[in-house]
Image (cartoon, rainbow, N blue to C red; front, side, top):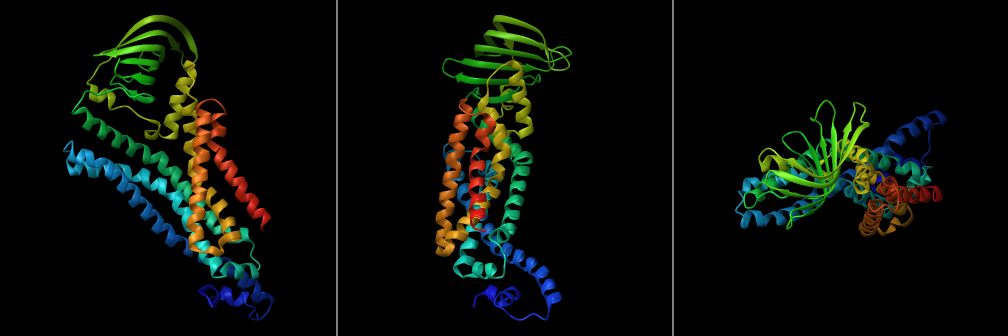
Length: 387
């Protein structure tokens, strides 16, 4: 007889007599709490182990990449530890949905192998009701992931990237990175889609000047070159905006020199990739692009992914739980195998959809949510098929 059978719920499921209808109703009310608590307890232990294990593995891989800084560039060990600390939040956020999936399937696999799910079904609980506490855990982890991606991870990623840039600056002058947002000491925002570092040439440039006169100014250019203290822009447009952000004046130019002030370290230290931005901050930059007429579908996809990807924890539970209910007799090994399969397929679909959205083949919002829609539909279908 297993642990669950020895509990109060197990005795009721095995047919022990009850004093009467009133007592039975009272027991049913308490049994719901016993069921939820029992399932949650089974999941939390492997969840914590998976978070810790995956974090150590990924952090060790990043430490291996940093060994060149430590051994070749003679970067102090304290600086390497700071880089690891900055990287830790993004790694933990990455492991959370994976840990939820592994923990769910490992726990349910154990329950199925020991016939405890069968006992729950005999007591009158549907598979969906058994999965409710798991779905609650998935939803909670998704909320935590979204909060961390908005409030903690972007800032830590920015600190890490700037520290790496400063280390690189010590051996060579700072370089311009493509598809990166940055701000100069005068408060102007810059974006360059393509950079040829050898020829010092730029393609598809956007400059958003918030300090030019009473209202902002947008400068877009098809090409340009950069040198010491200035950029030379070619074939562009200057747009003057009013207080509502509407273009009130537009002038074309064939050539324009844009002076840059401040030390290079300060100027390029303001560079930001999409991983260094919150969803709100990225959305503000996308609005600038849309006002200037630039097509940046890849950044629009990333904007929607910042909301869609945190739902991976909930989606993984929604798909993994019914699969384990149907085929979970294989125990822990089945849980490991099916977890790897689900993760692989989910992230393959996400990558393919992102590429299609970035290249305009499908709408950006569909590209970001496609994997969630497909896997959620699969999970709901499996629950409905096996009530």
